[in-house]
Image 1 (spheres, rainbow, N blue to C red):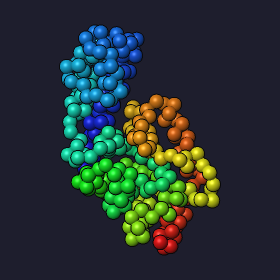
Image 2 (image 1 turned 135 degrees about the vertical axis):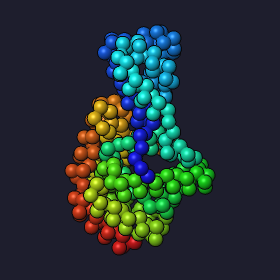
Image 3 (image 1 turned 90 degrees about the horizontal axis):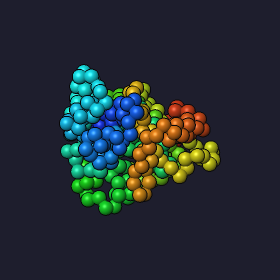
Length: 279
């Protein structure tokens, strides 16, 4: 799959720029909403990237902020790209927001305590996980979600982008998802992919004892300069996106600690292969 511009990322980039220009003009959201004759929540959703603004709104905001014709044209182009359809939107799946972010990330930092990270799952493993954690999905939705994961996996493993660093609790290796055959194939694939130049896999062994993220799973995405990172925290009630600098910094520190207590990438591959032989 060729790397394409993500409308999700373009929407966030546009919102960040518009917020920056508003702050530079020392204007409150309510001030801008009044001039635009809109509800303040509309401005907030545009700035947070939750909403794709129409071109007229972007043009009017540029006028309010006194931007040059050249800068206005650049923001209008961002707005057009933000309204395009992402490749994943042709599928009947949930999680499009994350796919839109992940598809343009420069680096994915992922910690999992109980399952193999999505980009590193085999089709059979992914299918079993989805049926277990999302029993409300129809068979067709499960298959489409698996297909999307395989498309993303091909992009990551074959196109060598983005860089992926996964830290796993050793429990991930021992939980037999789908039975022995499925698990052996999954661990074999995990060991193979972990040898790729742009993929790093580390395992936190049981011997490391208790650690900060035992009951958590998260992905921290890094983007090109000028666009802030984002953390996705997943749980039973859904996904939570964190974008505040303080939150990003906290998860970055947590990920650094997890990498520090995990065994080396080479030792991790050897452990994965050893566990696979016992199944």
